[in-house]
Length: 93
Picture 1: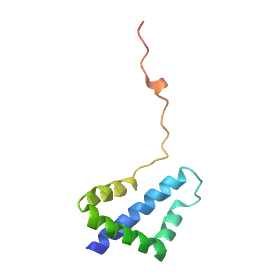
Picture 2: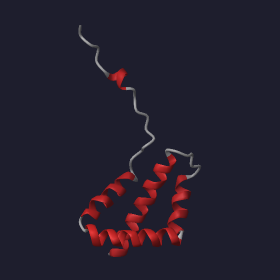
Picture 3: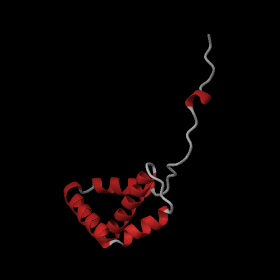
Picture 4: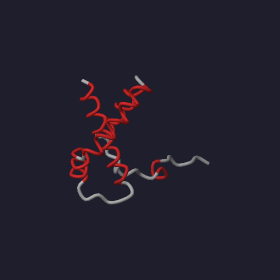
């Protein structure tokens, strides 16, 4: 069960990292990048060690972080946000 939690946390972190980096530099294939990072033993080993340390220090707060990371996998960060001035009602004089 612990290995599954760590795997989920690693996948969520890699997904979040890919989205964050994609905001600043263009990524041709985000899914391929995520897949390669998940296969990289150095990345997964270090993230697993980091997560184990967090679990020892933070305990239940890790659940909140894990939930947030899983949620970010399903959020479209590139959605266009409309200008607030277009949606504001006309001012009454």
